[in-house]
Image (cartoon, rainbow, N blue to C red):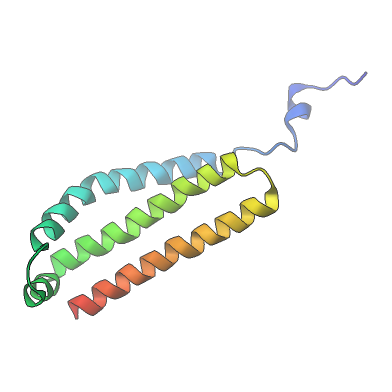
Length: 124
């Protein structure tokens, strides 16, 4: 019969080393998205249906380009953090979990890079 304390039973089952940090990052990015989403809709929405030259002229100005760039970067950062929590919670094997997280990081950073690149090409 083994006399184990609660701490001994919990050792090796993982810890909350980065849980608080992850929570704060999610909170900060969600607050940023609360501000950025209406700004993005007010910046991007009126340009739908306009001709190419009008859209190019609009996004050549710094304010709309900055708003759109921040929306892409912060939105994908928030997506990656949230989906990583889902992967951590629901993917059972360690190898599959790591592969999913690597694929998620490649996807999210790729979308960020493509979005910022397209915006720079559009603005310049």
